[in-house]
Image (cartoon, rainbow, N blue to C red):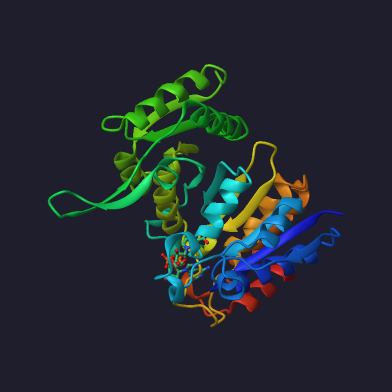
Length: 347
Ligand code: NAD
């Protein structure tokens, strides 16, 4: 029987995660769920955003269902103890280097997209984002220069093996889709990006069926709103992927719609909506649970080999939306729980 670690976290994290667990239970797959505190909730209770018992559960579990972390009450706490460190710690400790972020316009959501309906309708892309390197994990600090100015720095770095392994994930994903991969970098200015591009070209030789293209990140940001239908798989680094996937979310209607998977080399994964803890709507039952529910579908597909269950969840979300079910972010009035009810009815 598969064990799922449920790390709901802060803000709307517990609200949307509870909806996802209800949906998983509806499928009757006999999953076992075990909860543990993470983020600000864990810091408040245990003095650390990622307590050892939580990390231990994450290691023991077959997969992790994650909500969101972040609590403005702790924004002044020293950085290593802030809620957001929990997710960075889990990614690093568990070797979760491959982040998959699919973005597809669900029929009926054309009006919620920031783009014109005919442009938005064509969106069906997958962002493959490297998760364990780049400026997030390079040397960082604050110092005062000899002439008294404060200076902050974060070193951007990638080693070739880090680029190679994420490139393989991207090309394999493209093989299972439309066999087109666009590698996004800033090779005109950054040495890190030049290495990235060189290694991606090397790896491409092993995937001759996949059509490879390269795009500078500033152009990619523009193309993503001009003509997003041109993309199949977008392969990119940690920082660029973070920004482009939030941008993609508004193209498909709402940040409350986009799920993600973060996988290790063996396919074990952490599954979470791409949104954060949304303190502005937390505790009000307003959060859209679709991103969390679609993350649960990715969990079934990528970590438990339950592709049929994943398909059923995705179809149920699409059917509920097609039937007019909408939370506030999509222009409707359903609560988080009522939206989950409409999806469960479809199951
Ligand atoms: P956010 O994603 O939490 O919220 C951005 C905006 O989108 C807000 O207006 C919010 O109300 C709305 N929104 C987000 N999810 C929604 C949903 N499911 N339904 C409806 N509306 C939704 O980003 P933020 O405001 O920049 O950050 C808030 C906190 O979350 C910060 O502490 C940040 O560090 C943290 N954060 C955590 C993660 C994570 O846990 N992986 C990711 C991003 C941000």
